Image 1 (tube, rainbow, N blue to C red):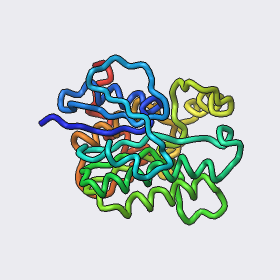
Image 2 (tube, one colour):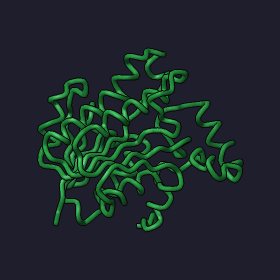
Image 3 (spheres, rainbow, N blue to C red):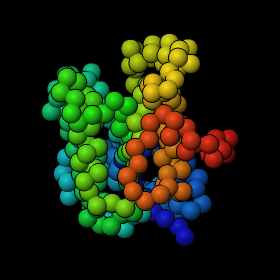
Image 4 (cartoon, one colour):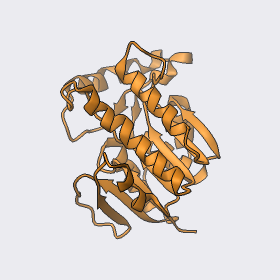
Length: 228
């Protein structure tokens, strides 16, 4: 059975890898990408829709009738100039508005990139608290299948420059061997692997709410052939 899906963040680091997997998937007939600005892509399976992401109702026409919604967006403190309200508009509003639209229109699966350390009760770190609060809000929606990916440092080539993150991408993999046991969730992971885990959850996942840290994402990716 051919399926239609919606993706938010298709031009980003994780989203671009996920988009390619969805477009190559013979079981996915159409991919609707919700965007601020269109980007160049030649696939006939891709439909790009420009929306106002701060208008909750703008999501509904493009989510109604789809089987799955993928959300891979996220901002940084530098991008929003330290403005916590602006940060919240991206990292909270977009995932939650998409989840509400998904629940309202009977979407089966919802897949979100969050962060390792997400904790709604963490009052000492704005970022981790925001991620935790976002996860809680998403999980309150009546969606049969929810997968939340919690990566630590995401490896890959970003379009924008993030100097501190670039340095960490060089250094942290050298010490990933030290992240054993309960610390394994802090191991760096490739953006392509996060995308593959989301894709696998979409094609072979189970009902219910699933929170996936490093080990769970790696397990999900084992059946994905990256050479295709």
